[in-house]
Structure formats: structure tokens, C-alpha cells
Length: 252
Image 1 (tube, rainbow, N blue to C red):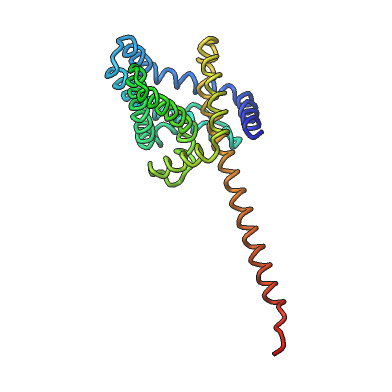
Image 2 (tube, one colour; image 1 turned 90 degrees about the vertical axis):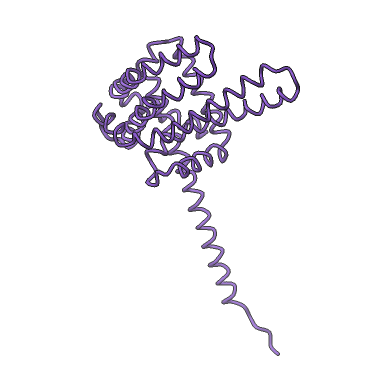
């Protein structure tokens, strides 16, 4: 149920702040327009090397602009007003860490896609098995994408390995939540390709907002579990102390 509650909250926040989310969505597209053209050109060439190079170069604009989207998403989830200047400020503040986070993620994506293509073209049983393995890795890698951007903004400790570790804990700790959210996001993305107006107006900013809300949901769940565990531990300690205090020593 948390999956759909999170989606519903994100939709309400989208309509509450539709104007600014539409503005930053269009800014994000404009900033990444050249990267999109490079990726399309590389794909048309059919060269795996050019595809990988285009994807890696896209991080130059994709990283900071995505950080700007998540900076706006943070303000929206907190109920604060935003403007396009907050988007630019988010880009500037988080540019370096965004290049690191999305650079590593994109490199991993390139490696997975290359291996997936390589093994899918071979007809052996081992290649078929390895194709399944890399397909599974692709799903996991895309699941990480939901959380790494929001964690990049939320965490005070912005070391890359800490962000990666926490994103992995969320992905593997809540696999059903992650997979269902990922599938629903993919449905929205594919639908936006057919309804192109959505792509230009709200799709990318909404996915960023939804990812941010999903991350907050899992953080809140983890905090609730931690507090419950601490309460149980404290209760057990208190009961143990009470039991020891009420012991009756047998007469000798």
C-alpha cells in the first residue's frame, strides 16, 4: 500500500506545484537537448563504442540538471515555494557530486548494456544464462536510479560510497516497493513518448518528485523500525531488571 500512497502523495504535490514543476521540466529538457541529440546520433550509427561515449558525455549536463530537479522536489515535499532560481542554485551547489554519482551510475549502465548486447548475440547456453544475469543487473541498476538522486540532496555525508551503500540498502531491502515503483515509472515514461506534451511539460520533474517522495517513504519506514527496535530493547531490559529485582533467594 505504501507504493500507491507514495504515488498519490506525489500526484497531489504535482498538481499543487504544477507551474514551477512544468518550468523546471522544460529547463531540464533544454539543458539536456544536446545530450539527447548525441545519444540519438550514436544510436543511429549502430556503434556500441559511440553509444557508450554519448551516454558518458551526457552526464556533463544530466548530472547537474537532475540535481536541480531534486532540489526543487525537496522544496515541494517540504511545502516551500520555489522558483527557477532554486533550480539553478541546486545545479550549482550539487554539480560536483552529481557528476560523481551519475558518472559512476552511467558507467555501470554502459558496461551492463554492452555485456547484455554481447551475450544476447551468441547462441550458446552459457551466453543465454549470462544474458539473464545482466538483465537482472540492469533492473537492479535502474532501481538504484530512483534513490541516488534524492540521497545526493538529503544526505549530509555526501561521499559517493555512502550514497551508493544507502541506495543499495533501499533497493535490496525493499525489492517489491522498488520494482513496482520502477515498473510504474516506466509505464509513465513510455506513455509520455506517445503523449509528447506530457514529456515536455511534467514527466521528468514528476519522476524526480516521485523518486524523492519514495526515498522519504523508505527513510521514514527505516526510522520507524529503528525506534520500534529500540523501544523493544528498552522494554526487554526493563523487564529483565524487574525480574532480577523480584527474585526470591532460597533458604539454605
